[in-house]
Image (cartoon, rainbow, N blue to C red; front, side):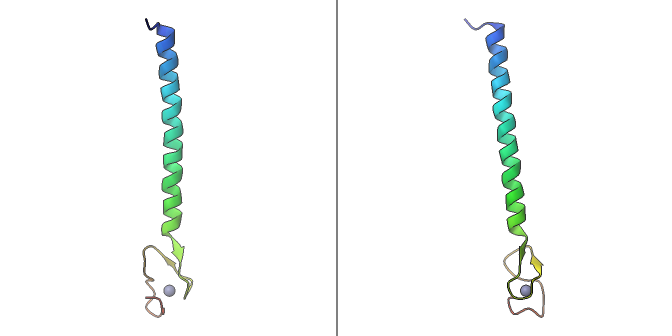
Length: 60
Ligand SMILES: [Zn+2]
């Protein structure tokens, strides 16, 4: 039989696990965001995607 105390402990553990999961999930998305903004090797411009937006750049 589950007592109320045991259920409360279980809920608390689930809440802690969920909070830790959310924390790591947010950290991963932040890392992805910084990865997306990379510097162009040719001109040094910040680019979002694969290609450089600078028209004068050799890398475009
Ligand atoms: Zn460039």
